[in-house]
Length: 434
Image (tube, rainbow, N blue to C red):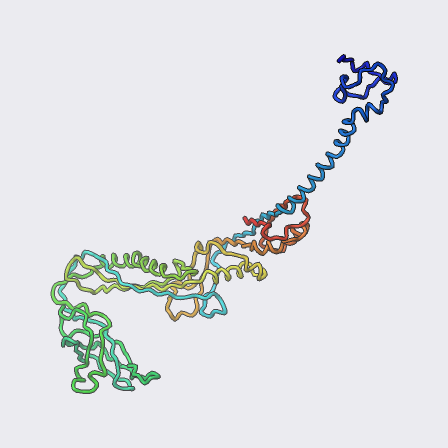
């Protein structure tokens, strides 16, 4: 087929200039010499229909893409909507110095407190050098019982008593034993009284642990088995001959040990028994100890007994925290009060207001001071924040968050960015507190 140049084509003596080479092929045109019978419209519409079709496609594509984008955007906003709320909670520090408080057994006022008391005995090994001649009796404590009469029974000093082995002892002082009482079932509850007794003879033979005692003068009477005694402590200290004794240096060593190691041992013992939620301060204690400085020892390598008692005032952390918040922030609301947590209570220095404050189980109230740095932190409830924000317009979020005094700053991020409301589903609201 003969190929002709595209630019030579004329129809009705008009040169075709608006047909691209990609739209028409010269080989497609009929081989004729006269093109006047082809109308221009035929060439553009009938002979080359792709021209109109391409034009229609070009006009629908942008509409399709825009529609698709809107659909995908809607689906994303429904399926993947979420809100992230980053909250910086409020924190505040306080420096207090000798701030005074009062603890009381009256639970309706002041700070409630509890008393803990531990007692123990330790033996300190020490090498003695001083000796002396000694002759002493063995001594111990006994407890008398009166099942004989409802009226008190009196025993005079130096009354003879006898143990289960027949050994004789004498009472060191007069004792009055109360009469017995009856319980609701008419059972006898004996009266009791405590007294010390000494061995009849000097020396070591009475050193030991007798169990029961009877009054010699009651032999052959009904009182014998109705008024009796039982040993409360071992009988000790009986000695005769050359013995080792404590000198001033020995006593100093023992006192130093008692005031440090022994005291610390008792403090640790109390600390191990502190109930959960309570706090014990090192200075909230009273410590006493006893060393029998007149003890005698048969051997220079002696084991000296030290008896001690440590009493402690313990405070419940929650009660102490409430007192501190009320004292340092007296004007806050109950809602804000409940949000605050007091940190580092353990770092405070505790002192009794009265020097050498005695602590007994009968103590009713006590004053003390606290010194140190306290940190308060406001604990925000994330679930409460979620429920408040669910479904609210985004322009209302800032005002709602400001209602919580524990929130210092907050950043809210919504997805999709064009969303006008926060999700109604609280699980799609993520709260992060820093």
